Image 1 (cartoon, helix red, strand yellow):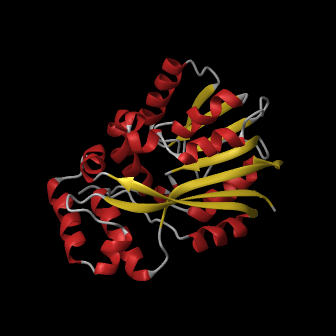
Image 2: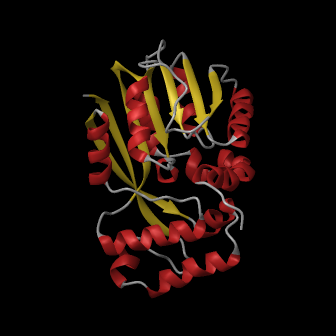
Image 3: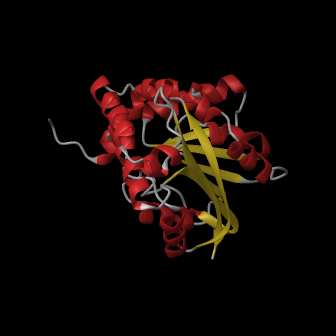
Length: 255
């Protein structure tokens, strides 16, 4: 197998699946998107940066409220899909840029809101990305970090990381609330609020969206059957492999 760094692996995994993420039901709806939209209500002059924008749903949620949104992602295919969808929705204030979250091509204090949704678990260097986010948000601005979350307890964390990696080899890790709080503080953010929600994952569409090879899908099901009752209860594993997991929304302000 040829050498492949983490960024190239992410692009290889998500580029061909861009359209699936634009139309994904689990990504295109949720209380967290409503929370983002409400947060920016009346902020007509605000400039927003959406880090690791994926299918663009966070960008689409806030765009009607603000002056400009830059949807930023490693994958050219992904941002092309976002640009096309923004055009279909008539969101002319959504622009796209390609690049890594650990090295942002933006000026200090350029944005009123920096946000990310369901992307952090793919980042190569979370602390560096948080420092970059802090650098580009202005003094009166804020940041919102949304992602699926590790429960923190080792036995549950191991189960989560295992099936995430079997499904998608570009997975780095899901972080616990304590880990995220510590990394944000080190980057210069003060945590303003935290919301934790449970989300439902339908196994069939979860696997299909990433085109997980059958041997790896079977490995996930084998792990689900063999782990402790505690893990199966926590993740509410159903007979068909569907399950529940935690998602966290952390709002931060420059400290």
